[in-house]
Structures are given as C-alpha cells and as structure tokens.
Image 1 (tube, helix red, strand yellow):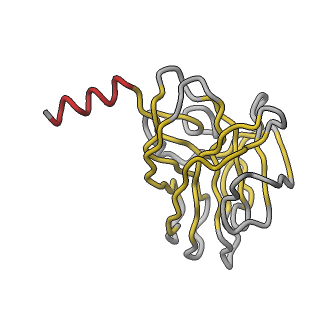
Image 2 (cartoon, rainbow, N blue to C red):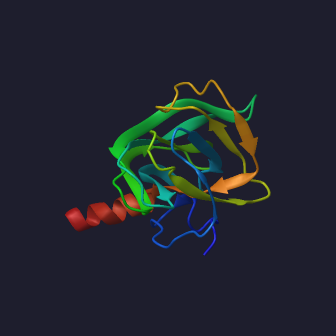
Image 3 (tube, rainbow, N blue to C red):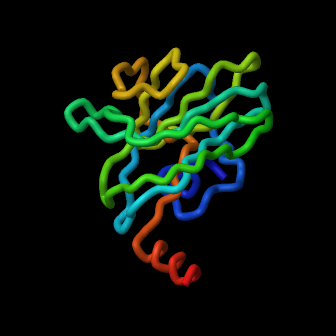
Amino acid sequence: MAVNTSNSGFLLIAPTDDPAGTTLQCDTYTRATKFTSPAGATGITEIGWYCDNATEEADFEVGIYSHDADNNLPLDLLASVTIAKGTGAGWIKGTLSFPISENTIYWLAVQLDNTATTTNTNYTTTTGSLTKRHSPATFLQNPWVTTTASAAVLYAIYAIYTTKSSILTTMKGVW
C-alpha cells in the first residue's frame, strides 16, 4: 500500500500496514503536511507517523498547527506531545486530546531528534498536497518561522479525529 489518504491525514482508524512510500530522512527535521479536517470533526485523540527503519532511541514530537493563509504555511503550534521513539520501525504515535473545527486547514507535523543511524519516514508525490520542512530542528517551533524546503508530497503522518456521533457512542458505553 502506498502513502495515500487511507494512511495519512485525518483518519478514524490508525493505519497498521507499511505505507511503502519513498523514503527520506526524518531525524533532525521538522516535516509538516497540510490537511483539511473532515466534515463533522470535533477533535483529535492521536497523531502518528511512519518510521521506515529501525534506529537508535530518540525523542520525537508530533503536533498540529493552525494555517497561515497569507503565506500558505503552518502558523501557531496548537498542541503537541513529546515521546520516545523506541528502536523499531513502524507506525509511532502520540496521544493528544485537542478540539478541532470541521472543514478547516491544519498542518500535522513531526520532529525527530538526531539518531546515529539516519531514521527515515515515507512519502509519495501527490498533486494537490503541500509539505513544508524546517531543518535542522530539535523541537516543533512555535510559531512556525522558517521553511527550508517546500514540496507537493504527502508524508506518512496522520491524526485520529472524533466526531459528535463518536463521542456520543463512547458516552453511551459509559452509562
């Protein structure tokens, strides 16, 4: 399966399969991809990214940014979490509870500290997609102030979103 809208962007279920995209370096970078939240979205509960290869332990941050419409860039870091990456490959996630608005542009971002062996993520070239990169990076900047590269690619990064109906269903199980 390639990097696509079933394993990146706003999703209801976390991906589990290797996205099998093109690899590129992730450590020492912040990479952000622009997505529009779905109709009915009310919040996010998790953000994750795909680590393509097993490397040394390092901390990573995942976060969600607002959109700078004037410059078509990430703007303010709305929420983030820092977590240890572990040493294996695969989907790596952080739990994050944050309200979002439906049909709104957000940027999902990942930043990984330096590892002795280069750590890779996956992407695909996709018309209509937009990503920004900042390097070198040791944290998610707030606000986003520097872009060192821009491309029409889709990174293997996702956010699990909630809707009013999913919250009500969860609450019914509690009562």
